[in-house]
Image (tube, rainbow, N blue to C red; front, side, top):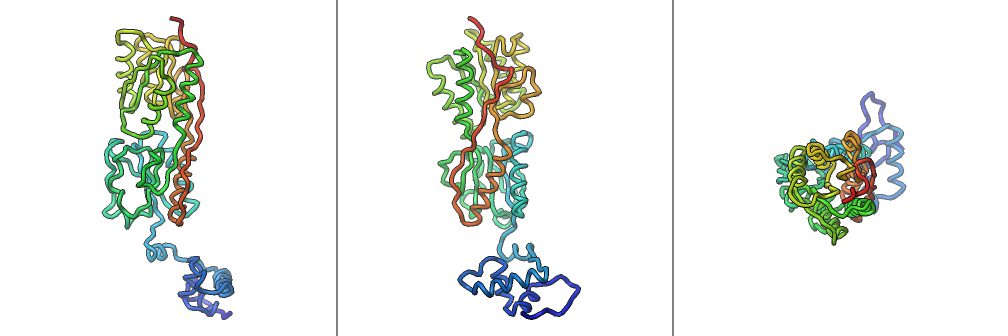
Length: 338
């Protein structure tokens, strides 16, 4: 092995090639892990040894330009104001950093409308897209492109995605209904999200099956406390038999229900049990604290980013459904006597 002439400058691939007695093209093949079938194992080992002895580090920026890779993924979420998506981003960013990737966070307008391409050319600026809990038509800007698309909390039958990572929201809703039925509740209000999303459709379908034969009324609301309070207030004050339990698609909706109940003079849980979904910090700020379904948001983001990296490596990740947990707290209790 030849020794390069001493220099105070950072070693280059030319220095490695000279030290190993090979061409720069061979150095690029070996250090880019594309040498198999092109050069011998002995030559590859010589190149690696020369690079190690010289302290050579590839210029990742230049290499990425040559490969058309930016090592950047975009995470599309319905809203930046929802704590759940902040945790999803944290998990995705931590996983990305371990693989030398960065993450661009981009919200879909109003949480439900189409997510416009935020770059003049998404294909030139990104390696792939991760989309969490999006409405069915929210990703038109990215479908039909060459960008890998990993869908989180979305229809696993969607053929436009390269990989799917889901939460077992069906099991979460089953746990909620089982919990309330065991407490003796038979009259329910379902405060459902008005957002047109697969994840909320699944919750509604499971709830309908689990409570078949019970008295169930469904009211929809936007995902904010004010609208939830108004919708729940109207439903609880309506003529007829009042429900004894309100099942909410989200902790934010549950907070609105608790405010509406207080204004109507109803006690939680003595007069009305309330459940949420997500287990945000809000769940333990409410008094009484909220019975809800805990979703592993950070792990969710991490697994989504790992799925995208696997797709970029040429793999086909199997669909994943992460387990969830029911967290019983003070907002649920036995059904009041009729």
